[in-house]
Length: 209
Image 1 (cartoon, helix red, strand yellow):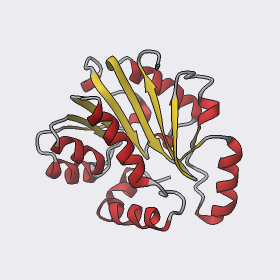
Image 2: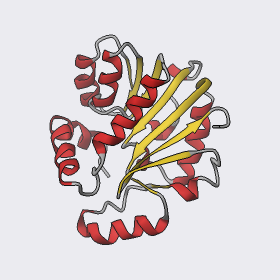
Image 3: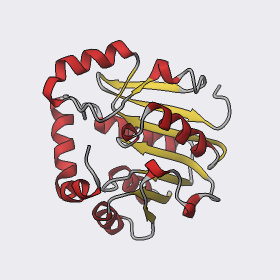
Image 4: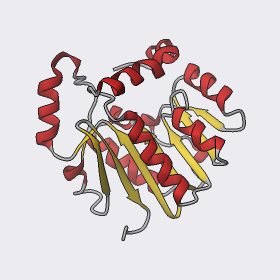
């Protein structure tokens, strides 16, 4: 697992390495662009105004939302990632914080239309994910949604198959969402499968219709 120094060193190459994996349709970033597109369209189509982006990295998704008038608050633990993103979004509120330690005090009393997290929540254990998501739900406005885009699978069988064919590329330090297991904790969650190793989880503050 990369620490904050590792991410700082990787920051300048991050977008390029992700794009290559997406283009080759290989683990871990197969479907990356469509994951971001799915989240972007959900926010824009439902007229979201405020977004909290957790683990925003270089701001690929946040920048598109920002350019379309969305008020962005972002959390990332890498100072270098924040520097890159702040240049793209000068008016965004960007906070350096390790979200594995919970919600930063700067946003504890704020409310958002959407909370998004792309390719970051896999750094938490499944138990930590559930606890963190429950806390995030308290930051949502009425009818707000949490959108999680990541390496994710519909079933444990799919995950094991991907692990088998990925072999040495597989990262055992990362813990990926298995949708049918997450439904035990969030029964109203909607899972949109994007590729053989990616998907978007949608969790609403109120029961989804």
